[in-house]
Image 1 (cartoon, rainbow, N blue to C red):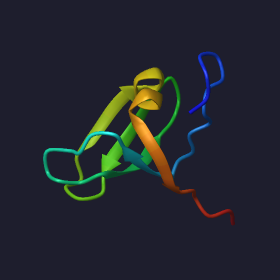
Image 2: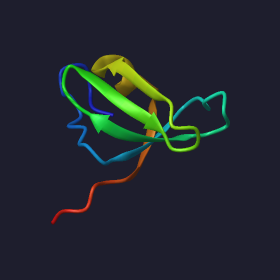
Image 3: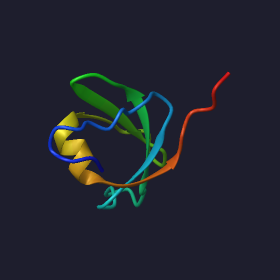
Image 4: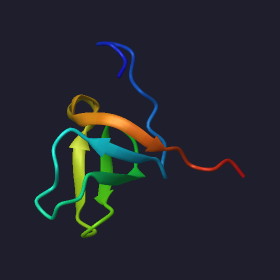
Length: 70
């Protein structure tokens, strides 16, 4: 992930793998909304979380897929 002042440009539709597993057992999350706070949805149980951008950048392990350009 980028450094302190270089923000990663999260895009709606990206699939992220976080460092910690969700209690339902899922690792993958879908970016639903971006901005100062980012909404992500668990791909296993459908739970929606809204996290501050800085906290999400620390929690992301890898980016599994990016949205398809139309």
